[in-house]
Length: 149
Image 1 (tube, rainbow, N blue to C red):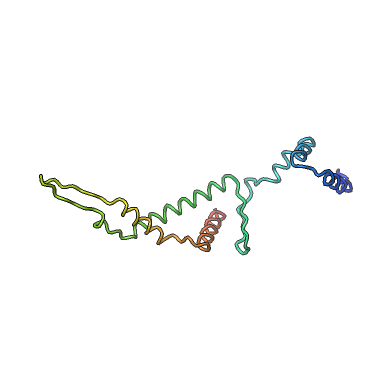
Image 2: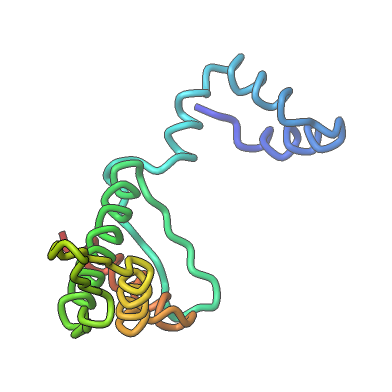
């Protein structure tokens, strides 16, 4: 059982000697508390995604697996939004393709790839909102989605 009255004395002594991080780490290792400190100071698999959207600063703590899942969900949403925007864009390809009949009755085709890329980018920009509030809403939506799983 620990004598709790000594704790303030030890803390005062450590502050007085202006303890640095390396020395504190050595002390923790010497008293056999390294594994306990790692467990207490790092997220554990059972930790849940937690955030508070009602404050100016949002703090999210992920385990490695949760971060992978969060990123995977963001990637999937980007892919779906891109596919949807292209599908519904109504891109007019007629202006991008030029057909010419050569003197020996061969048809040559030219395709303006830059115009296509520009049209696709414009279609994505039309469906994806980049303002701060929209980005924050989407991030919180992903967090809510993952917390439900």
